[in-house]
Image (cartoon, rainbow, N blue to C red; front, side, top):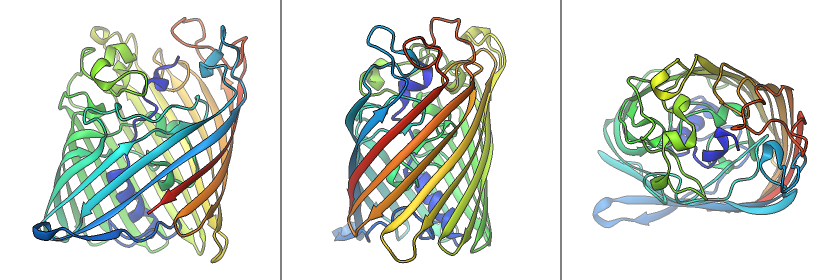
Length: 409
């Protein structure tokens, strides 16, 4: 089992969804998206009494899948499973939000997971984070429309893809998504100056309960069709092997640690990246590049400098006013050094995913076909890593076929 498999459910949605909505709309920080794979129904309005007006929204989905490269029960290879076909419940979330007034807030609860191309399906879980089923929960002080301060369990500022699949064009996610930070506890501040919006966030990166991780993100709205976002993050100190780390369906957060997860490189990493949204009519194209790295630290068992480069192009096309759309992405990734970022240390390759989608007002159905090719398996000599795909652990190709159905409200 690779390091990345151990926290496959842990990805941001709450704040990242807001940033992504801003990116796609190209108007303001929390504007409605222009070219979504989904057009979610309007939130249900609730009279919150002394709290004021509240908005209720959410969704749930599941999928059936077919995989190649699974191997056998005794020698399962890189996927860590001999199960070629099956089904999983994916995400079920309910969000209550207060989005006006001086004091605002968001509470999002449920069970979550994701499906990264090249990895096996992961079971949905409520024990991924320190907050249990609370996926996101924070209070926001908004003294003006151009400045807010939030505190609580927050989403990461890193990357374009969301941890909740119906916020993405595709069901399958990329290597870039897998190596990014996720939900953490802390504070952030957002300011808007004309076409530029920026957020600074200080948290216990990777939900470690060690408060030393600083992130920043800035979005420049050039016009309604062109928006640039840059992001970065770094560990300001050192996060030890005994610090907590993301759990999953089989290992609760309370039982996991940086050392047990083999994640010292992640918890002590830095990252830089950016993405650019271009919209023309019903077509939205978003290229993204990022690099994440960790420095040598023998105290943490990091025997040398290492990193992971990723680049991807995302696209979505809506067929007029019909309920049909098609999303897709292509990616390239390249790991270096002795640490495992994605699959094996030193692995590199490219992948592609294509997702046709049908959406009614509340229901949606979509398929996804993904293919990953490893141009290098990387270091397969270390028994801690799984080598390649298939029973002989030498396979370089992996294909995923799935069909998903869900409901949004």
